[in-house]
Image (tube, rainbow, N blue to C red; front, side):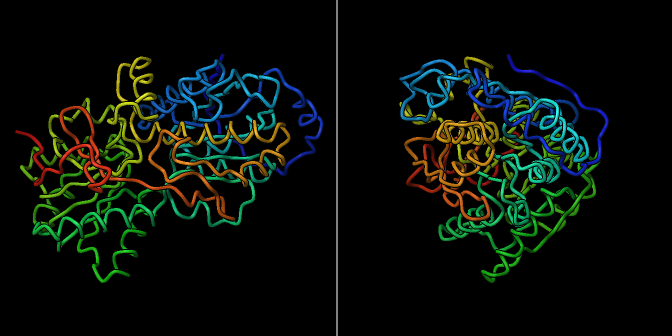
Length: 419
């Protein structure tokens, strides 16, 4: 059964001791332990809980045979076949909303729980510190959600990321807006709204850089403190500036606050785009879905096509949780799937062999339930086949609307918001 431990005190990362004995204990296991660092309390808890539920579903599917889900790796048989059917065990820790706690959690998972690899940690800032510990100890770290571009620019050997990142996301938004503009919709003035976290600043800067390189500079940059209690000034600035499209880079509580404040001020931008994160969180739809009809979001998950891997996994997730599988949860699950697949292909729990297997990963779209073009890592550990599409909120579900060739529904503009 998975183990949960809340870590309250952040400890400094010390020089790595000799842990050969611990690694020798990994040989021929009956269970393979993987550490997972996610925010399970605090303002990001809803997203963390959803990711945990998705990972728990994935591990259940890996540990018991589900041939109906083939060709997704590890679904046809029970456990990890090349490790004698060893079961996967996840040790969860609560990274809260603190890079220091995430750092401490990673240290404890490696030195006390003796996990063979790490997964997480949702927020880019938490991933930054937790993966630094893994790098120091020579333990593979796979990230499925964090999009800050600098995470794969550190020259790390042990860090791998499956999700699309800042440049991919920026290109998606700008290509989408350019496509909409060709239909006669005005998209000349674009605003970017972001928090001051590692995630918010990194993605906003990347969007601005890519836009400038295309000679379509971002007209407005509106920043705010993460987990703020008041965005009235920011919404007023948007209302007065009247941009044609607004891109929000916000975690859940902030995304909810913005929608409530926009309704209070009677402000609706013609095009409203959420950068996944808070806008894909099921609690966002539950809290302000009625105020957010027609909001656009970037996503790599589309469970609306019957018979697809995505539809099958979505149905299982709905049965487990009572809610639809969201993009962030799907990306968390994909990171864990890729890690488990690599451990199996390595046929070993030795970190170096797992790292080599991760480097050799080459999964096709038919093997995934996310809409990636595949999973294949470059020398920096970034998935070069990661991709996304645009989805739009209709009722309580997001439906793919762009590119047209992948759309399950028709794009509706302008942003409807509330009735």
